[in-house]
Image (cartoon, rainbow, N blue to C red; front, side, top):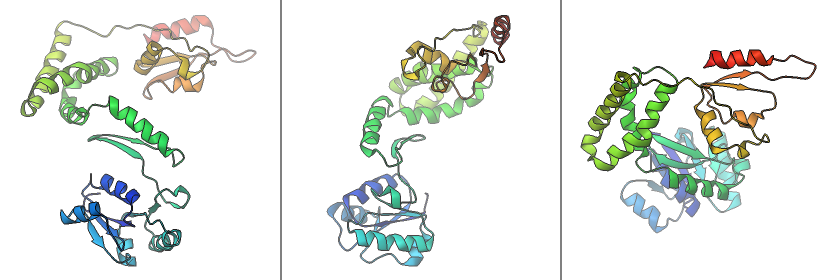
Length: 287
């Protein structure tokens, strides 16, 4: 969006919500309407947006990367939409999913950590509810910690891939990182985090602490992913290799990491089956 032109047609309250989102970027925002409220005038005064009292010309629409239409008058919405279609520029009619080329999800911005929540336009109230719930558990410092953690990727390569690296990053994001961000001034946080991460890796390597090789048995319960235990869910998310039978519902397997290796060891009546001794061998080999 850096330096890219975006057109807003209609200075409504709904349009203002889209503008507030666009102001998180450095896009060039132009708003078209005959009258503008106090907030629009304020944003124009500080040169955050540009106001135009005429309708957008076809050349301006064609030059824009996309646009929003927030007019309340239905005939006006349709007429301006036709201009966007003729120019080949994507347009969103606010609160009209069926006539829009795209929709805008709710966004939780902890740059560079970004979480987008959408419902394909079916349940915007639910989306706002989920956004509020997620924002409550994602700290404002998540973005800064992510940026600082980017400098540790080279250190992490000294650890073997898989569980060892995941445990390292878990330690960074769960304990070491938040502790440093809370106690250290910003100008010292980067060096402090790097040194703490380096010390942690050296401690692990010097004491020959290795990740234990073990097998965990997780009950799939009645087959509903929502009824699996929290401990079971955590184990599945952390596992490198998943052995499962045919009775495990796909929604349960969705709880596993995408990078995990999946092995089907299911038995089928009057069909291909894996003998129990072979399953034991698979478990031992995997461990």
